[in-house]
Image (cartoon, rainbow, N blue to C red; front, side, top):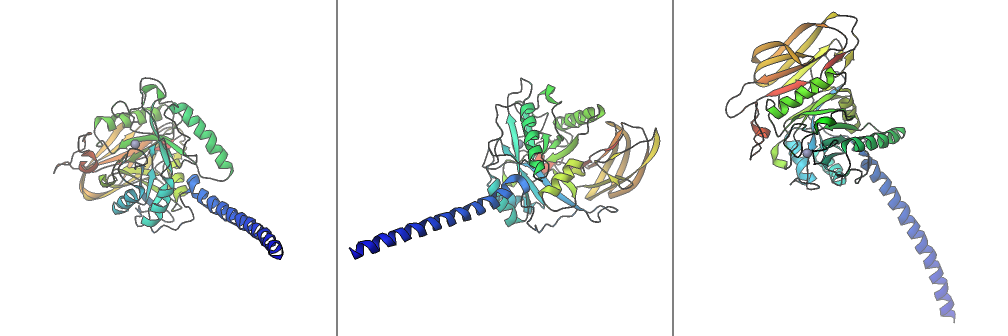
Amino acid sequence: MKTLVLYLFMKKQLLKFGAMTFTFVIVCFSVFTLSACRNKDGSGGDDFDFDLEHYWGNDGYSNGFFWLAGDVHTHSIHSDGTGTMFENFAAARAAGLDYIGIADHNTASGWQDAVIAGRYHNVIPIRGIEHTRTLNTIRGTGHAIFMNATVGDNFFSPDTTIHEQIAAFRAAQSINQSINQSTGLVYIAHPFALWPIRWCPDSFDADVNGIEVWCGIYGPRNIATVRAFRKWDELNNQGRRLYGIAASDKHSPDRGNAPRTIVRTTERNAKGIADGYRRGHMFGTNGPKLGFQVGSNIMGDTISANGTQLVNFEISAEYTENLSKLFVIKNGEVVETIELNSKSFDGNVELEISAGDFVRIEVEGFEGNGKRLDQGLTINNLAFFNSAPFAFTNPIFFD
Ligand SMILES: [Zn+2]
């Protein structure tokens, strides 16, 4: 009897203790889950101090800013890529990148791995998804990069049109904005790639931030890239403010990360990078560096024009090999070609400017040794490796 009472007492105490332990475990788990969610939201570990190595300082305005190199269009085993996040981030670090955006088709299921791999390899991870709707015979089809996307893994669907998906994304992002998160961005991916991944011709009115004008499966002067640049200029001539990005669209770790986008940021984290993208403070390149400014305004900025006036543009270009040509492009037309035969250029160009104009720069290197500017998609995807040097800035706009 005594034993039974003792047993019942102990059982009660054990149950009580068990319940406390259970509660404690639940509380710990919630705290852990919540802190994990902070990274899941797309912040990319904004509180982590990445040991980055590539600051592409441009003379005159590098003070207080970082120029970070990266690639927001990469695939992994979470969709149709062959690399794990760890392999992709190791390759990005070896290629000298400071950030990479994950962009698996319709899923962000690799994000947790990306956060850990990014910290391990000191490459900032950017949460993203490539919305993929493959039929291109109807409006609202094509691929789009959703960058810094703070939405759930199952938010995107191949059954949803680009327009519907962007509208839902903007709505979700504005809710996130109210809890102090950084902005999500949308870019049309490889608009003139081959069917079935090209952008539907009547979908260019979609509410995007810009266009992947140079996708790494094509060389910079391949017709697919040339048409993307032309469409970009055409849309900006219609009064849009679209920014151009360059990304690899790599599906295996060993394909390098060319081309890449160099962005000016004030913070070395996903939020800073997204803010730089949102402002168009960036240039695309497979090597050459470009600087482009009017006073303290840089590529991507908008300056107000008073009537028609002469504006002085400061331009710089630099590479490890000789560059061949630099183009000054106003409203989509080449207005000045500067012949180069040197590793660097520093100069000024004066142009007559009115409201509505926009000016951007391109630079080319020499072809040869198997390197060409018009490489297309081939069996070995040579455009990744064998493109001759090329870089382009975002426009400076006038209104
Ligand atoms: Zn892709």
